[in-house]
Length: 198
Image (cartoon, rainbow, N blue to C red; front, side, top):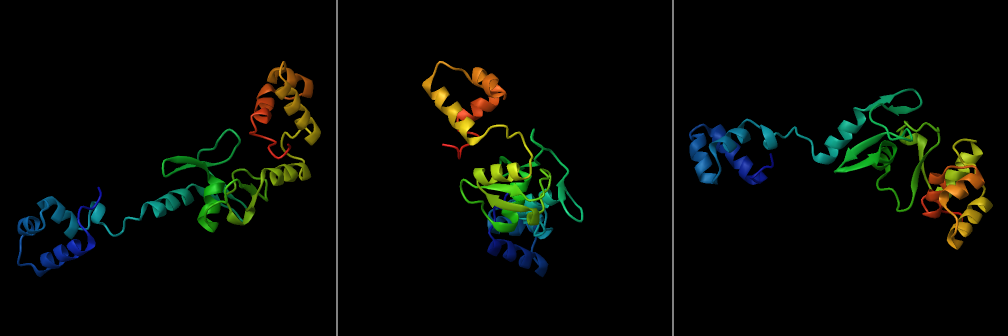
């Protein structure tokens, strides 16, 4: 329920009610609201409850309730995407939990940047384990730590893009040629992965 009264009106109603010499019905008529609204105000119920957190704070509280902290990683214990990253709905948008954790701690993520894990634990939302980087930083980090499915070299990615642009070859054919699945090739030619290899 959204308040229909401003803070000055709320304070006036509470003061008049506290004085004790006027009825809820009379207060309601004076302010052009229902007697029920006056009851909600004086009993601090619904939208007039001062203990209700603003939406941003409610999101944060809900977020942290889905985190199990250990001595090192703070693990997301709720819903995860297919890649194993936690996810949460914030303001009507589904976002990854580690990105939201970064934003809580540091503010907005710069456009075109990723939030990467120092710990390589996709469920970790500990802000101390997160850092900002680019696609290239992410791939370099994957290669350095020998993780992920990075089977293709920069030259192979460039060849795939050139061959696909020339035409007469499908993603499936390229996938067989380079030993990866056709969806990986599709991501490359659409610019969704390996974007930094021009």
